[in-house]
Length: 221
Ligand SMILES: Cc1cc2nc3c(=O)[nH]c(=O)nc-3n(C[C@H](O)[C@H](O)[C@H](O)COP(=O)(O)OP(=O)(O)OC[C@H]3O[C@@H](n4cnc5c(N)ncnc54)[C@H](O)[C@@H]3O)c2cc1C
Image 1: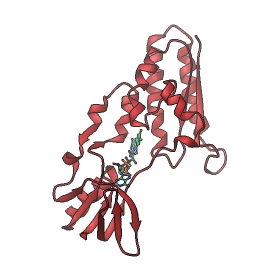
Image 2 (image 1 turned 120 degrees about the horizontal axis):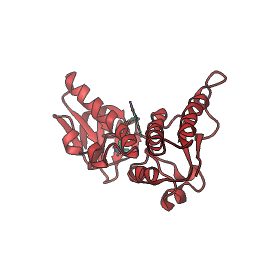
Image 3 (image 1 turned 90 degrees about the horizontal axis):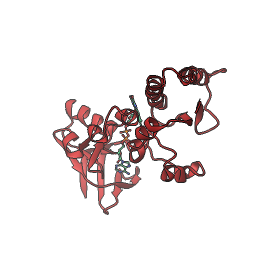
Image 4 (image 1 turned 135 degrees about the vertical axis):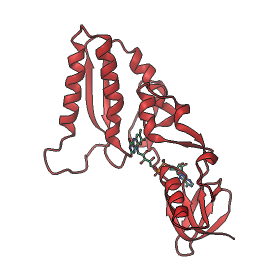
């Protein structure tokens, strides 16, 4: 049975950072289980959605971001057995660990919102939180000449939900520049104000009851 002092599940920002930190602190046998060949720096996704970055700029070969001295196990964990300190992988390996870090990130739950999958496939919804759709966002926003746009700010546990405001600000700036003589400028900025107001809790903060607390932007045609 393969064995490592430290086994980390997931080679995203958390797993890579944890592995590097442990090696720096003197750990000698650190392995990261990660099935993807490409590492994505997710905070840049908002800039892709805002037309300021390309997908290529936030992607690196996984091998290039693996900390030196770390063993990369290119596989996925399908089961964790804490009683025996082992994990089982998709390829059928059993890996034993002394210490383990679970950093698998989050998965989208498409079925939690009826119609969401169809909206993405149909091209009238997009998200900077979904890598496969981030690149189609800016062309859609940029080419918009009339109509309404609804920006949503995902509540926890979505990671860094408030940063979803970045494409909103960028789009407002774009529209303001393009239509400077038209009233839609102020419409955009009133949206921004309303957005902040909506985010401010009226009572001590409690978990939002809906999965997406929304702000809407209506642009005059
Ligand atoms: C659009 C957006 C903007 C953001 N902006 C910011 C920001 O400005 N500032 C900030 O601090 N944070 C920001 N964040 C949050 C930050 O990117 C995340 O908190 C961070 O990426 C989480 O890292 P992670 O390693 O936990 O998860 P991820 O980056 O999702 O990585 C998880 C990894 O685990 C792997 N994995 C999953 N399951 C398994 C398995 N069973 N076996 C093996 N491997 C597995 C996946 O393939 C993946 O590579 C943003 C996030 C998004 C989406």
